[in-house]
Length: 230
Image (tube, rainbow, N blue to C red):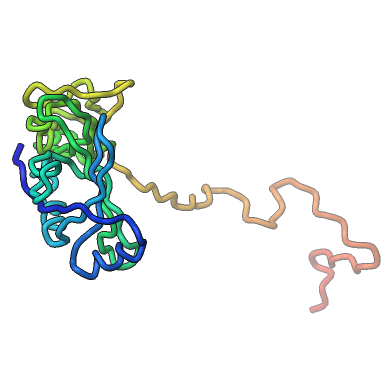
């Protein structure tokens, strides 16, 4: 696991207008916190923060570079980042301090490799989750976890218990849930209207041997054959 650096400095928390001023300077308000340590309000360089976040899948652990002795050299991960809903600008960041000698739990993305056998038969590869929770030493956190789907046929499933991770980390889960499957092909059936069977009586025509219906009251009876005037 690679590590990166980011510069940060302590900041004042009051008045609230200081937050706006910090952002005008191209910096982002943040807080550094961790187990057994009081939170410290800091500001970080906005450009550096954006660069670190864009490479977060490769650089999870960040070393703080600061003129403040009690901040310099600390290792943190990005715990939460708040963004403006419209512009997407970073408004605030939570930096969680980690001990490089103690395990932590983080979400690691899954990377599905190979071509499933069921896909060759017309099936559809269906990832059910995109990441899993892993417990590992900070510097041993994998960038991603590969899941080979080559042997998957239609209706086959890979469960989280079958996923292996590199290094000494371990997967954290309560239930053995499915992570990927191959769905059967979907065929749209078009039902065509059936033609009338041979000899079927047309709609409205009396069946053979049936007595014709009596004329309505007051109506003239139909003329018998041969009674019609020539």
